[in-house]
Image (cartoon, rainbow, N blue to C red; front, side, top):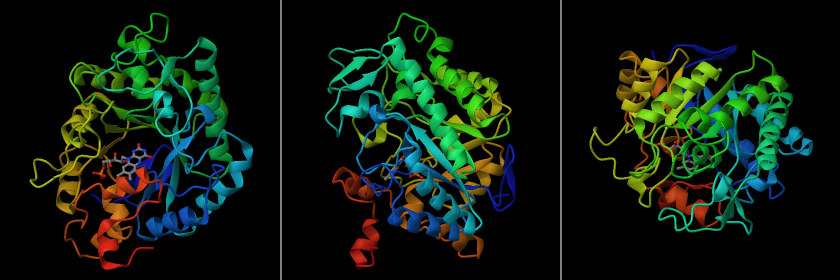
Length: 369
Ligand SMILES: Cc1cc2nc3c(=O)[nH]c(=O)nc-3n(C[C@H](O)[C@H](O)[C@H](O)COP(=O)(O)O)c2cc1C
């Protein structure tokens, strides 16, 4: 099944492989697409990845995480995004833009107050400056997502994906740990999905019903006392029902160690790999829209098995494609050795040092770009 065609709404994909959203740290400092990014995306599309999801692309300056990240908060970013889409299309691929707001994480690398659902004093999982958003600020974010989606569509991108996972704004609204509001944006689970649903409704007004609008959803936080799995699964069902066209299943807020995050390391045994597979399968049983599995998938056999068993419809990879942008083509041509990625997370260290991502295995050989 893995090399069979698939469609998400009217977006036809040549196979079931997705490049999971990956921030490359390679954008221009004004938020526009850089020549380096165009080269990276061309390589991925040439490598036969069916759908490429861009790295975190901020919809509003207040939601920016890094200076080197793409931003669709203004029209000036459209031509660059159009060049990126064309580079992917020229190689027969499809491009989705991941729309993003950092929420309280906005103060991690840049000097500003992080905007959060609630002020959580003495949070053992987060020690940076943040404050609760006003009603007006929340609606400003809803508007910003809509405008950014319209710009993505105008640039010729094939779809958008909301970032509703990991440490960021939408995951913060979904988690009872970070969302302690008592107004209509907080409280029970349904209220904690209101921001997601309002953003979707606003995006639909901008792009219409036929344009694919997807979400990457964290269905459990990385520490006890956060979003429990049962609620995350229910949230997935609510959001599919609300009209999202595809769900990629990951984790929510991060704990302190890598094994409490979406990018786990030391994936030695088969059991440690494909680490969110069961969550994707649980979601798949509850929804009628396509589901993407992501997290630690490293070999073709497992990828095919996930599809054959009906645990997901699409296979999403991040680190393996940093290491080998041509991995999918290699597998299709019959060299089915597992991905060479060793899940060491040295690519993340590059980002933390404010450099574009590279793979340490290339560095060791001196063959890095
Ligand atoms: C360098 C790096 C950058 C990432 N950037 C993003 C991002 O922009 N948006 C996102 O949703 N996830 C991001 N992720 C998480 C991946 O999309 C993926 O969910 C995670 O790495 C697990 O998949 P993998 O085992 O195939 O790498 C990033 C991961 C890495 C390693």
